[in-house]
Every structure is written in structure tokens, then in C-alpha cells.
Amino acid sequence: MPHQELVPLPPLFASRFRGGVVTIGVTLTVLTPLMYAFMRFVGTVVGSPGGPLAQVVSALPPLFVVALAVTLLVSRCCLHGDNLIVSRARGIRNALFACLGAIAVSSAVAVLLPVLTDPRQVNALTYFEPVVFLFIGMIGFASGHMFVRPSLATLRRFAEGSRSVW
Image (cartoon, rainbow, N blue to C red; front, side, top):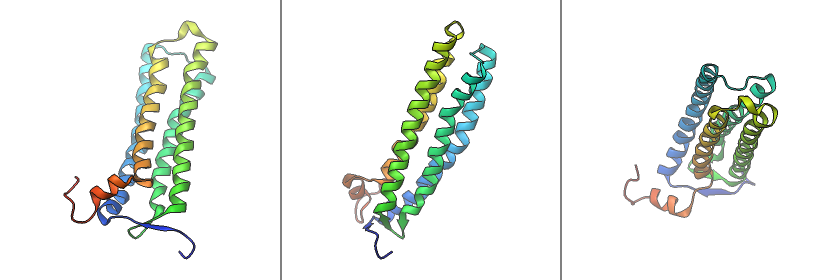
């Protein structure tokens, strides 16, 4: 790695980085389809707007949450031993921002499309489902961003000789 800037990380933080992003990524990968299936089931009971375009648009936020989960799983490539590769971390951080932006935009479209196309069939689930996936995506983004761009206070907490964090 001759041309890449490496930033040393405390060993405890590096090990939490390795395990944390995998745990969060796998959790999001498993949780998102389950939540989508549950929302589809509740939608059939409640009778949410069911046009083909509305169903496709309502599937976009969960797909972008899965993309965020995959980005978190890939973020392990930012580590080289106990060092953070800055260029890769910037790339992962930009990908996390792109995924969060895509989740926010697709959630807004998923809320607005049924309201604009068939306002008589709009119910609480029309608003609740995109907000759930936006919230899940924000949790994934915040945790991933904490790993690829740790603050100095976080690194000090994990430094040698300090008290145990977790």
C-alpha cells in the first residue's frame, strides 16, 4: 500500500469495526426483506393502494436499504490490519451518503405517488411504510458512518489504557 494514506486505529476499535459492520450489514440484509413482507401482509389486510406503479415505488426504499447494507459489508476493505485506509473510507462514506439520499428520495416518492394518483385509497400505511425504511436506513447510515469516519473522542475512548467502552 505505498500510495495510500493509513491512519492507525486503536486495536479495540479496529476489532469492533470488523465485527460491527458485519453485524449491522447482516442485520439490515435480513431485517429489511422481513419488514417489507410484513408491510405487504398488513397492506393486504388494510387495503393499501395497490396499483402496479405504487407497488414498484414502495419497493424502492427497501432495495436502497439493502444496498446500504451491502455497502456496510464492503466497508471492511477500509481496514489494513489496525489501520484505516483513508481513500477507501472516503469512498465508502460517499457511497453511504448516496444510499441515504436514495432512501430519502425514494421514500418521498413512495409517499407522494399514491397521494397524487389515487388519494381516495390513501391510508396510514401509505405514510408509515416509507418512514419505517427511512428510519432503518438512517440507523444503518449512522452506524456505518461512525466506523468509516470516527471522531477523535471515539478513538480516545478506545485507546490503550482507557477504561473499557463496552
